[in-house]
Length: 290
Image (cartoon, rainbow, N blue to C red):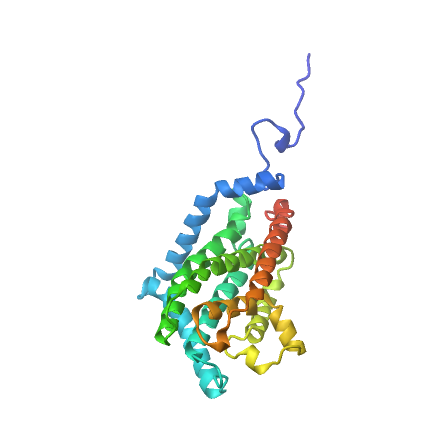
């Protein structure tokens, strides 16, 4: 009587079967992410509609929420604590700072939780896990686009007329999005390994908030060469905010810091490359329950 040989090869070695959550080479992995771009876009749009669809004002909250934040910060810091002293066009200055920081902070916080809050999806379906943090950053980008119009409206309201320099908003938003994407990829993996990181994220975000010059002018308060000014000039969020204000606002206080473009580009590319490799390296671990 002949004995039938049993195939003991792992599922990934059997023709026609693929390992769920397996890690392909980086090039093939990124190509797979690109093939899922429609899924990423659809997920981003769905989240926006789901977050605002049940409210009476609906999608208007995409604009109202950050404007209310700017109003609260302006009241507390600008008029109560008098941080507006010496800052030209303070309201436009504050609105640009708050709206741009909101784009960073929401990408940072929600991107970090993109894997842990979708554990069931990760464990049941085969798709590149990078699609989840990318979808959340895409959601924040779609919400930020109308904010650019709001910033421009405030700038015009304070007598800053559009000129050719306003075209620099396009590469600025692109660089800022690249930076936020890389950071979301890094924190998304870290949160999977260290769940306690979610409790630290608000404090990290707050540290950036108070050191980025959102409601006060770093250039006016700290002389060049001082320790804080040196650290602030090298801090990417301050660089992006300074560039945004220099593009939209006129006057000697908003001269374009051209060297910040090089710093911001270097930060964006470095963080994206690091985040991509760092996230991809743990692709096989995201679906584990242990």
